[in-house]
Image (cartoon, rainbow, N blue to C red):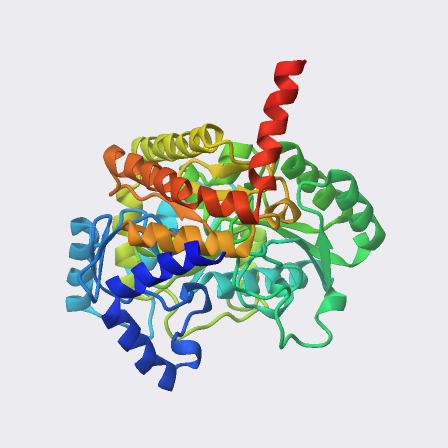
Length: 460
């Protein structure tokens, strides 16, 4: 993007010399200077040393409003007093133990009370583990091998679910990834997200082989793209028709309703996968469903599957999760979703005012931004955003004290105020106004298409 982007980079580097030094040190002992691909961006990421509420502070003393919340996992922001107290108290009692703990029971009770489709559940340490084990349960229950998933659906780093998890051009993860087992692709059926007829054809073609259909009700990594309710209903009907299990990955979307997105959609899956907010900011994964399915993990003679992990049901994580979920009641969920709608509406108004062909997507407190279109229903639509434009916007927002994902993803925590949410919209407006000359020069279609549409409306 030429000199416009160069000036943004220069300003960022001027503000973050200590982060640059740390990144140089990190590059000697960590591949690429990081240990988490999604947090890396050019020229180097800001190193965070402290956080409280909705505020991050980097090693250079710069402050940022956090609209990423560790990729949706911190529903109450950083260091909520009630969550911290629960964690501290539990650390003083027992850190980890090779035995059951009452807190495991309590967190499971809290979740099963909220979610009608979940009668029993198991805890693990990440969404990846939860998906992997839920798929194993589906294979065991059905005696089948094939997993059907969505194009653009992200379910962690497990081989089978990496197939078809293409991200849009502005993301850092390569299409489909590399290093997958050579036999994996034959066991995965990739479905067109929101494409009912195409999905029907593919599932009918291999219906006898499909163990499970797994879907994020809102594609997260691919751009916060909601599934239509008709599509979710069709998946439920198709899964029943072909004898497969329907699995909802609610790692991100559980925050949107007391019963998760499935309650909003009024669609009941057979299994549901959890993570993120249910751990109070600590590492966690979980999956659950009907007792008849989950009893596969009970000791013999009821069950036939083992599921172990040194840190499964970790008492400290359970304590943080219980405190978090007790705080996150119906009123807070409603207020947070309304605040997310306020941001999304504000961003779409900015795009209209600046005559930009762009749209903010998502639902409630989950948001993303896409350029080159005003209709996003699949990952293919999301690929229209120029990668270097996303990079420029992200870095300039950092310069303005706004912390979002490099690909444009955002989410809100209960620590965010209305004034802070409005500041996010204002920062987007100021950033885009700064970049308009660059957009006009390098990507004129991002402006002309909206202008043309407006002219067409006036003529008609």
